[in-house]
Length: 301
Image 1 (cartoon, rainbow, N blue to C red):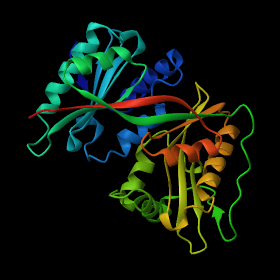
Image 2 (cartoon, one colour; image 1 turned 180 degrees about the horizontal axis):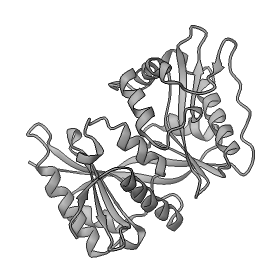
Image 3 (cartoon, rainbow, N blue to C red; image 1 turned 45 degrees about the horizontal axis):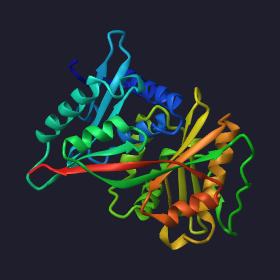
Image 4 (cartoon, rainbow, N blue to C red; image 1 turned 180 degrees about the vertical axis):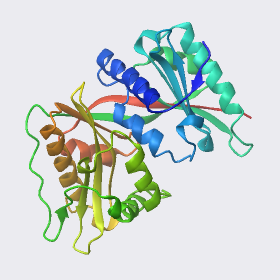
């Protein structure tokens, strides 16, 4: 099979269908379809999907696998349909992805990575180790059962929830994002473009806490997958000066409340495994651990 580059929203739907089939196969072993939109339309490498995403297709047009490059970071993610796990296609995709990445990286980038491999995807892990990769803990996946109502959110005096995001608020939204994630290059223009380009984005699902000074204090962007009735949080953050005031918990519970109102029966969130405090925070919000993800890397020079 010869992969082809991403060619528009029809391909996004094919990729999301693969991830959805994977979640039906193993409920917490693939990323949520909303994660795909965050990756493709907020891509910190600056590469558009047409340059960073490639698909392998079955004769009927279904997506059997796809690769997403973050060339600036010498990384790629490789995803297979559950029916392709452990097949010759898996080995072929890995070899192709490695070779392509080597043409993209510079001498200043000494490692090559397949950054998100779920720990129950044993065949891909074995292939990576065979190819000289080393493994380290990366992400923890947590889930919330929405068949019961989530706790009601409460906010300190002077704080309130934004009813929904608007393009005119994009500068404020970018500012709190940069504050929560050190090193982020998010701008108002970039966030406005993201709001307009990601088809699954909805302004009422972009949960924001507004502080007494009018600046945004915390946020939780939620995603909906109607076929699976599953929600997702990606990303989540609180301005450092407002941490430990209950805003993070409140924004999560408000997000869960909105997801349940849309018919979702569960919701997931991911965080770095090394951040034990963040895991404890999500568990205190009512989430429980359901899977882990490893990062594989090797030196290429």
